[in-house]
Image (tube, rainbow, N blue to C red; front, side):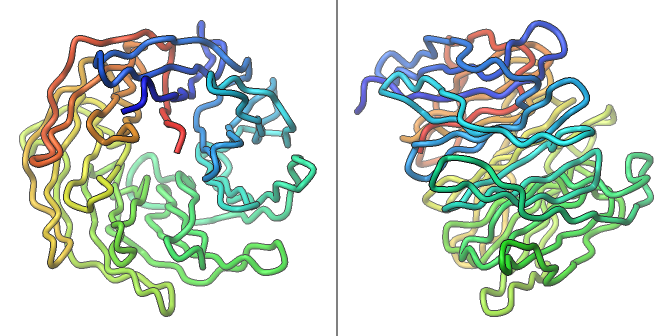
Length: 345
């Protein structure tokens, strides 16, 4: 077991946060340590790390400009060196994903999908922007709100969750341009936020922010289409207060799925049926703070770290890999206005 694992936290910088923070997990001591601001940038609310751990990409904001930034990850300590940025007028994106040399972004405020190339010279080039349209019955669905932009497991498509239009949209990349492939309407008023794929690459799990549900889909790798097979509630049925579902993650063995609840301030645990990939609810675990915007499994998957935005903290949980259940440990560190947490791959 390594001495420690390096992770990064993205934040809002509306109050006292400086930008991107680095932290370490000591698995032997079962402690979070070494919290340090490593990049001063405006509201780096989401981060993604290249598969080879050489680069980190983040959302960035500078006054009235918003966009993306690229950093090199240096040394065992994981210091960040800024390489490039692409900023345009208006609000920044809220989500981004990277694969090989392509960076895709989802912009909640603009209802826009972005595609960038990361060049051999370690610079970012803007390739394509696509404007989404649409709306839904919920008061927050007055227009398109793209909340997730990523890649399908086969890397054949870019997949988008549009919270405002209740849509899953797939795109092909053709000559550095996004070309719409298929659009799927999901449950009206549900507000799809994030999507995770089962390790087998054949099942997709969509977390809906507004209805706090997980919608389970079969994913057809031949034509990139989705077909729904289950919907299950991700918050307590009797919880009447406001709840915005947040993050969704799956254990690498494909046995357990976790979702976050802002409002109920919990992580929901589901067991994945190994024959059908459908979900059965197990339990809720309180996140030890307010408004858990994100959480992450560590590289050993023996721990989960919850990122509580309103209480400005990271809280460490031990994870039973046989049952999936979480136990809070005596390790809480301060990270102001925390929104996103990622470990090196």
